[in-house]
Image (cartoon, rainbow, N blue to C red; front, side, top):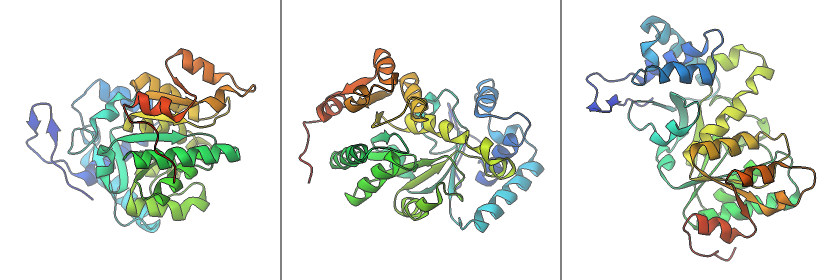
Length: 305
């Protein structure tokens, strides 16, 4: 756990924030009936200087924190950190999200969140060409000193993470599960590598996740896409179907004022219409990689090695 001093707009607060009590309070809020990212964001929007611990008794917060720590320890997570809004190194850019989260769990090198980041996302069932495109983009982002951000899902996400690591670059995984859970399970080794050598982030409440049915936990995945977008300068969509969760991130990117890139191959498909809709709203159609690099103020493409 990491202790940070509370911060306000006027400077350091008088008393320190307890990360343990803060995470316990966050978890307790999620156990309230009807709690969602939207309802919690609205509560904090009505009291912008509030902390999770302002809405929960110390006794309940401490009880929830002890439960979380026990569950994470049982899952093999012995070291992790939290970032709480108004405390220490919480990234201000996350406030651009429609429903900004008040607390993030993480494992690894938090400082990676302060580097130049680009998200590479797409289908869980991509074509072979899609996998190759994702890997190539990740490698070139690494060459340009960007951190590659994705969601550790099957398909495009794993291709992007793996290519970034293989090229010796940096990567961040924003997952739709608690830190002590891996989905899908076959990505556990990659998740542990990212947690150890890079950065793994979760906004998913441990107790709520453990107490509700799996079909309800699926809702955490699209919500993390908004956080993933907010952490980055832009999102590159490699491939995605008409109902893909990737489109949640596309909408978030445009809402947050981030750049949204859509590969030309998506426009050439006759079974989907979303690329044209997002282009009309400001997305950039990528006919060649130069369209990305020009928009980011980067020099021409570097030959892929």
